Amino acid sequence: MSLSTLLVLADGRLPSGAHAHSGGVEAAVSAGRIHDLPTLESFLVGRTATTGTVAAAFAAATCRALTSGRSGVGTVPHARDEATPSDGDGARLAERVAALDDGIDVRTASPALRVASRAQGRALLRAVTRIWPAATNPAGPNPHHPIATGIAAAAAGLGPGDAALVAVYGGLTGSASAAVRLLGLDPYAVHALVARLAPECDRVAADAAARADDPVDDLPAGSAILLDLDAEQHAIWEVRLFAS
Amino acid sequence: MRPDNRAVRIGIGGPVGSGKTALVAALCRLLAGELRLAVVTNDIYTTEDADFLRRAGVLPDDRIRAVETGCCPHTAIRDDISANLDAVEELEDRLGPLDLVLVESGGDNLTATFSKGLVDHQIFVVDVAGGDKVPRKGGPGVTTADLLVINKTDLAPLVGADLGVMARDARARRGDLPTVFLSLVGEPGAAPVADWVRERVAEPHHTPRDHDPAPAHTHGP
Ligand SMILES: Nc1nc2c(ncn2[C@@H]2O[C@H](COP(=O)(O)OP(=O)(O)O)[C@@H](O)[C@H]2O)c(=O)[nH]1
Ligand SMILES: [Mg+2]
Image 1 (cartoon, rainbow over the protein chains, first blue to last red):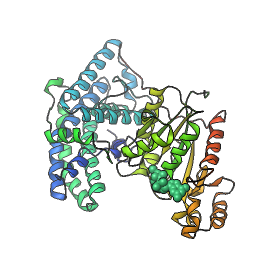
Image 2: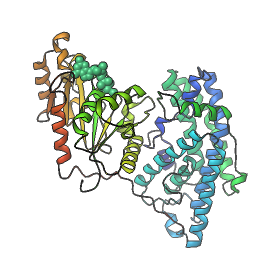
Image 3: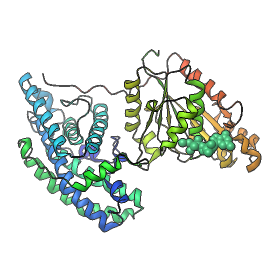
Image 4: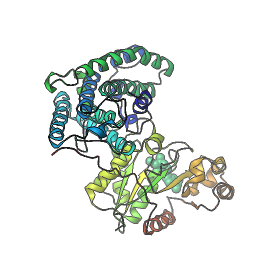
């Protein structure tokens, strides 16, 4: 694994549209559920344990599907060139990734969140195909965000655990940063919170990597009903600062 | 139709309230009869804005797309242009070939400019009510925009703004780049800007750009 490449992908400045998504924070702030540091903390803990864990698992599984034929995953950036899949492998790969994409669909109750996830997936793919033009994308132009994250990690020469970490950590920092912007919270205090929760991201990512070959139906399926309900409301607001 | 079948993309930036939306509406009114055009707005966008553009600009709703910028209007036009590119491409796909796409930025400060990955040309709009020192302050918007618009000249006597000073400072900051003074409440309104836009659209080859996403390679059946 290349740590510096992992940082490129996890950097909030990667132009992948993330800054315009609040991970549900804008709606939760408006509903009065997040208004200070403790309420932000419980939101982030809950989000990481549900949506974050699902995203990590599906990003890891997608990355695994794309890199399983690669020798020494993540250690040699272009090792996959030696392991170009045969047609049969290609079909199996496309089938697995399509099943993973469907798996996110059925785990995302809110239609607005499905749209938001595909918009983020499309934006991330746009960045990936510009940064790593040899990227393999068996998922079509509008994959769900975790699927695109797995594709991105594979394209960058990273492995399933890295993909999972990018997914769960990106969800955490994206939401935390939205809260800073919406509530004017002390950015040091919020980053102290992020630092406290970061080890949980490691744990979630390790778990996701360990299950990356599991059947789709066995992968995590946690969800938070208020995230779904809030997202539906948020999508019909007249004035929104964040896309989701 | 343009050689590469893509509309000319013009960004309209500048501080809040300087008249960007009013300029977009005036341009739509002047150009909608002769050019196939669409608008992407990054402003905090209400149904009133849409109504305004529809009433004032002869522009149906389906030719306007609003983009959320997550409280960071400058990020959406400069550092992470993906949502704007997505909106522009969606309009082009849905409406068929276009001649011109106007992208209005969310109001920001004097340092916010558009990425060349998003637009081919940019207009920066300031107004005389913001003070006649604005051109002297410079900043990337005033200094580098392809066209500087100094709007609301009708208000100059009311706010004690010296248009001569503004013209002199703009020339000092911008060298040969053009500056126009406008009042969108009177005549000739946006006509000089519309002429400038027509010239940009008529240019045989706009700056070639390479941002259009190459479809990722697909394995499988
Ligand atoms: N007096 C005067 N008012 C103007 C002019 N242009 C725009 N306005 C007004 O200025 C206000 C802000 O304009 P708007 O286009 O919404 O600004 P934006 O925030 O840059 O999009 C509106 O009330 C406009 O009607 C002008 O040339 N003269
Ligand atoms: Mg406006």
